Image (cartoon, rainbow, N blue to C red):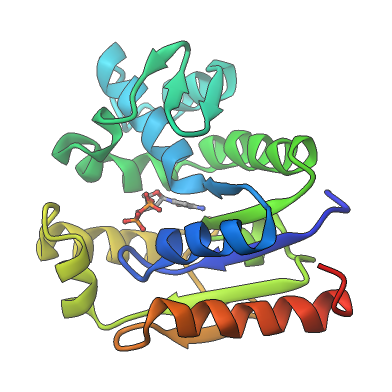
Length: 211
Ligand code: CDP
């Protein structure tokens, strides 16, 4: 597990994780990792290769052998899937792929390596504070009401957002849940600047002001 500073941000679709992550990155000089993009990239590759999503072993083998790169662009096995991972097809497939336990262990290992290689960072997802970095000194769980979250994901639509929420919260392995020690922040009406200030205060408290 990484010794570097990791800020764990979890929450359902459209709760404001990426917006907060981007704003914090500038203030803290840390990189951000959108772990959702790793699950989306595996889903996109499975679709491209015609692998049935219920063939757990085949999808898991894709996840453990694929070469993944996530920065400004998202690449898997040297294929640029940056736009494709936001498609309707991937929205519909990703929560099925993410419920596959062996896909999760392969991607969690990759996410931990990423944090080691980048000297920590702001990591967002569903199980970051609970499973990937349970010792992270700063853990946030963002929420917002479903109407607001669907508005933020208007191109996806409320039905698809609710379906992913349901699958992500009820799956057997690493379901979306508030991690022990996480601070819950409702972003429905809270301006981004206020959330950023709150988190910076938490970072100062956790690092003794040495950020
Ligand atoms: O951006 P949004 O919050 O809508 O979703 P995302 O972060 O791109 O994640 C897409 C999907 O990946 C989620 O609906 C989960 O099924 C899965 N996921 C996960 O299981 N664990 C994570 N740490 C991150 C995402």
